[in-house]
Image (tube, rainbow, N blue to C red; front, side):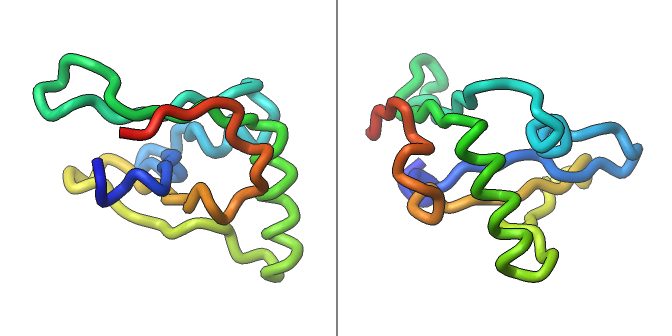
Length: 104
């Protein structure tokens, strides 16, 4: 959790072509985004953040323009090969993206 506490991930591609969470978010699905980490035992939500998807969409679009179509975030693969996801640094987004947060 400490290694990834400053970022969050969203699935961005699947080998099957199934629409991903990132595609749905960009299309306008959802208002808020809850992202969290459990404790080591997997019993409680030890750290979490609630993000405003309207702010994320605006930021994402502005980054596409600013970076000439390059998709923001860092693309990573799941170890099992089931999908790709993008990691986003929380501090790269506008401060009003975070609506509530509990840090471990």
